[in-house]
Length: 122
Image (cartoon, rainbow, N blue to C red; front, top):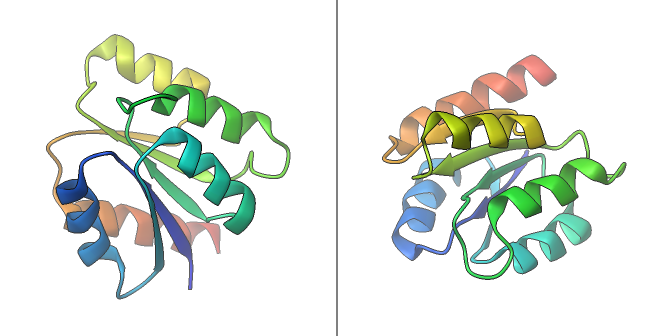
């Protein structure tokens, strides 16, 4: 069973994703970048669903830290964010996001993307 870390400071979004994913994956949650990095170091999730706009450490900085660490550089990171202007997408992909999905999103589409990605990685 793959481990998915959901990082978002909006509890409703976290819950929607949690419900969509918990049947197939172990789901971890974090509401800040600092909390996310602690969980990444401790639990080494297979996939991270990462918001950009969060208090303290934003998603781009979290992404940068995850991708620059040799222990976590291969972790799949999917940005899920309201920051969906072309420039935002370019920054996210340039820093190392594997996918960049704008909000609003369908949690079932996110679950299908993760399922397909993990099947290809297996």
